[in-house]
Image (cartoon, rainbow, N blue to C red):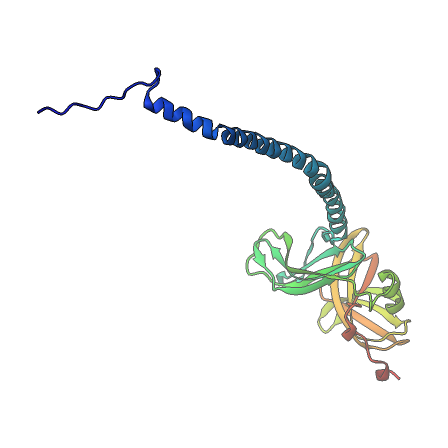
Length: 297
């Protein structure tokens, strides 16, 4: 006997499923309406909250912070400019003077000038003489001062045209120690280094054994209240405006008030000398250069 399929019988023109859906809607439509209203209210609250937060952030939070950034940038630029202004400027160098002396030897000299009033420098230097490097020396240049860097009596291994350039290494800048120099450095230096050079004379063709040499004589006077273990004296001979001779000697154990006769021999005996220049050089910022008071009492 064949099974007959159960057929959904319409009630009032509606199927059983449609009647169930209608019944579910009658029971739940108020809840759905409330849920829809709640969703719309929630979206409105989020949108208004986002808008209000944007206004608050722009005028109460971010704007003061961003305005401070602009101010900080301006302040930092001023600080950077001040730091750059306070940094030491580079040392300027004169042209290198090269003089050929006896026995194929060469004297070299350059003047280093420090434009900084608050900084002084220490460094190593050498001369490059037509490709040959001289021994490495230690140099310094004090605030607002010049220093004469030399290599005297150097004998190169090769001959040829001789031109020289200064090479500087290991440059170290030192800020002026205000506990040592409370005021202007030039006043500090003038109070400590009061050397006079009196009765300067140059004599050519002085007989020294079988040779003829030049001779510079002068009186060194320490007119200041400070004594020195040693002071370097750099000496230049001129013919007109041209440098024709370079020498460097050292005066040791120089007491305050002392007068001392000094003599410099020039083996090459340059003729036609019209001027002798004597330049004292001592590192006044090194306390160890000064004679202790008890030494000359």
